[in-house]
Image (cartoon, rainbow, N blue to C red; front, side):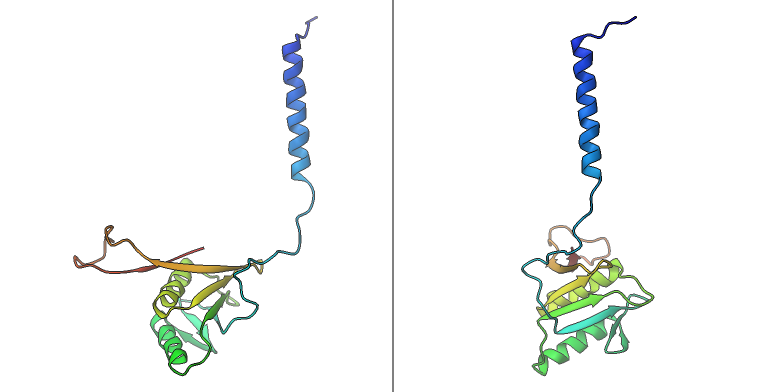
Length: 152
């Protein structure tokens, strides 16, 4: 027979304790109610829906990024509420990275806040900022350009 040393028995106890802790962390349910961040408004001025071909459905019309920017600029010129925009998933279309970047670019240019409703109903703010002019993009001409890029 083998004799267990105290060092080996402590390793077994530590291993068993670690297994119990992992099992305890893995079970249980998560909270069903998600608490929204303080900066998420209760309502939104405009809601757009992600449509196919990287377009947006705004009031039933499919719009490209430029068309959407024109529609939002018109709202601003007519003094209609235009401080918050929510983008939702389309019935048959997922929100793609291109949708997020396009909306972030428009929000940056027209100075409004853009939000994204994810599949689980959680709402996130889309923030955009100008790229650093010191790092040129491969497709950019040699002169200085500012680009807007969306983040979550």
